[in-house]
Length: 151
Image (tube, rainbow, N blue to C red; front, side):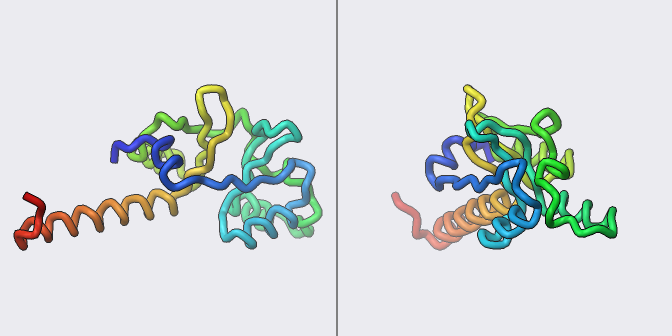
């Protein structure tokens, strides 16, 4: 699928949920549960990217300690900016899907040419896009086979 992400974001929109690095893990998990999402961008007060916290980060921390982790700050388990794999609005869905698969990640922040956060692409988003695309192709092929295509 060669659609650029910036075109997709323009068509469908993309809400970015975020948290500060000083917020508690419990607060971050609460936001993820409220919006049924698996990742939050960690932003500073100026809106600049500090990192990302994912449900996988929380699970790793829970598995590695006997202590309660809800009170710990987000920045203690997040993936920091310098280690983030970041996409561009000019990237295609196919490219980003390959990047995510190769790096075993399920969320990728998308920035514009100026480095400003535009959205987060998740594997769930990609599956939804692929399903819609496939459904449309099947409908067109069915219409063609049945002779119901525009002349």
